[in-house]
Length: 260
Image 1: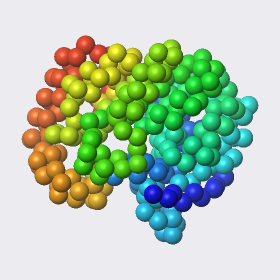
Image 2 (image 1 turned 180 degrees about the vertical axis):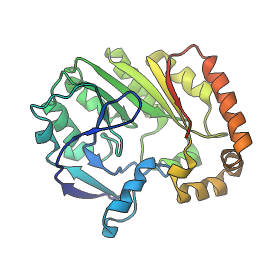
Image 3 (image 1 turned 135 degrees about the vertical axis):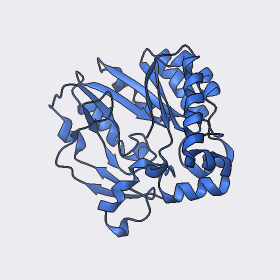
Image 4 (image 1 turned 90 degrees about the vertical axis):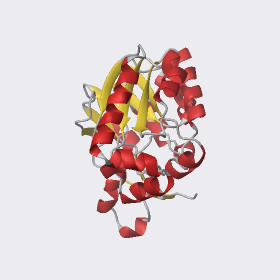
């Protein structure tokens, strides 16, 4: 899938956030070529021109971002990224994230979350940060679910392999298990495959409203049993209770469990 790249200039690059564990966010891009159907950031589209096209088909690249971070120090944890994946497909050519890392003050506390093993390209720069944590969004999507919900993102096996490499390189790492959907996520399997390479975990249950109408329709059509549970309050609460029981039995460090 060809992605339309719109080059823009940002007024600022470090943005205050209410995300748990972070004081600010930094987004090299707006939009994401991974084109995940459930992406909660698609709300951004309402403030973009209609000729941009469908969410997932375009990306804004903040071309002046490397200049904006140069010589600037901010306190508290900075999260990369909230409305994009800093290592989405266009980054391979544009190298905007890499240029930002090159210029960023290495005293900044940086937390990165991605779905891409492209991050391994930048190990030399990531090593220069005194305080850095690197995480991967990992779930159980394969086959039809992967093709439908995360069409352009690297497979989970690639993400786990990259997580393992980064852990062996000495980085503090974490696993973000999301979106948790009944019948589509095997928590025990995800944890067993990542616990040796993860210092801690975040868990996030599906935010059906945030995922949008198109996702809800696709879930109902292709996975009706999953849809039934996520839309039935009592069944969904029971599902959450069962998941928490599994999580608590795994002897892992949990930073948070997000329920929308």
